[in-house]
Length: 119
Image (cartoon, rainbow, N blue to C red; front, side):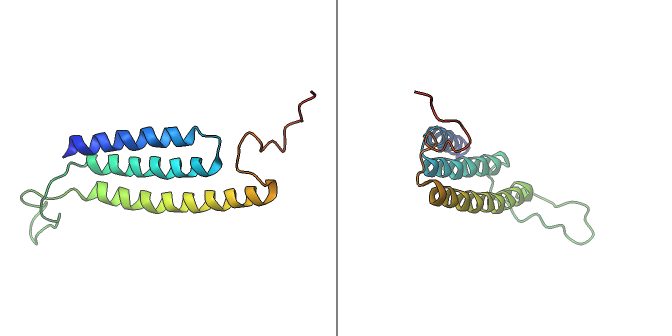
């Protein structure tokens, strides 16, 4: 199962890079979402996929007994999902503002600070 999910992470990263190399700003945002999801999935897979008990420590014990699930990758992925959603919302608002002020989403035409071509 880990090999299959690793291949899915590779496909997500490849699709994200393809979308992020586009000149369209909206495609760039979709690539950003995909690469964020790929990073989350790779963190989740790195914690080993096992079906164990919750990592609860019994009274009088110093550590959990038996095979338990690793809670750290799950907590990291939950935090990364929230941060990724906030980043996407901020980037979407910036994209909307850029479209309203410039009238285009093509990054080659967004040359407000650069001088015009002399020819």
